Image 1 (tube, rainbow, N blue to C red):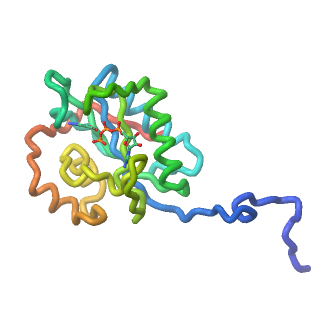
Image 2 (cartoon, rainbow, N blue to C red):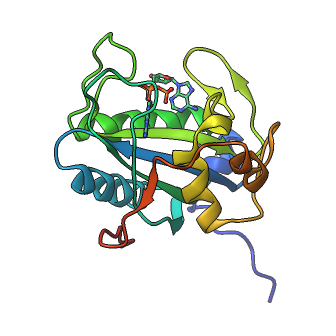
Image 3 (tube, rainbow, N blue to C red):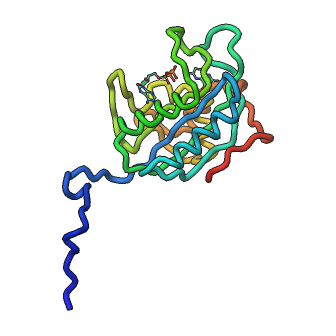
Amino acid sequence: MTETPNPNIIDADTLTGEMHPIRRAVLALGSNLGERLTALQGAVDSLADTPEVWVTGVSSVYETEPVASPADSEKFLNAVVLIDTTLSAPTLLDRALAIEDAFHRVRPVERNAPRTLDVDLIVVGDRRADDDFLTLPHPRAKERAFVLRPWAELESDAVLLDSGPIVELLEGLDESGIKLREDLTLNVQ
Ligand SMILES: Nc1ncnc2c1ncn2[C@@H]1O[C@H](COP(=O)(O)OP(=O)(O)OP(=O)(O)O)[C@@H](O)[C@H]1O
Ligand SMILES: Nc1nc2c(c(=O)[nH]1)N=C(CO)CN2
């Protein structure tokens, strides 16, 4: 007997033509205000709870000297999360901003002001974007050891789109302010 599709099952993606390919994305987490580890863990949990997002890797936690931050800024905790996602890049950024808000992120005008939680999109597949809302790859990732070192721990052969192998980028960066915190860990649900 020939199987026929069940007409009662409606596949919204097929109907609207909005199917997205699955893409790998790299997200950078940072916190230098309040309960820093709690905020990073909350970001990992929130990403894992997001429909169409699958967390595939979480780096160690690094304590890092603030870069280009106001005087007297506290040290950051930084980490990198790898995901697979079928979300579009703007939708993923919306989600990142909502997760920051959920962890009481405030946005003073002062540049790089201390923050409870920062969730940056570093790369989303091979997507490029260049507007105020979304720039991809992240325009400052190539010069940030606090992003590239945790990323290299997860994927030593990774290549940052338009910039090159991340281990080569790291060779040109000062890593003296980047310290592995072996006593701190992030868990994936
Ligand atoms: N790749 C990206 N990842 C995250 N935010 C981005 C990206 N590209 C553009 N933005 C925009 O940047 C705005 C400010 O982001 P945010 O407050 O996280 O910057 P910042 O962390 O202070 O500085 P930096 O961008 O240098 O990390 C966001 O509202 C967002 O729309
Ligand atoms: N060490 C460190 N320095 C920073 C960081 C960060 O996450 N870690 N984020 C910034 C703006 O996003 C500016 N400076």
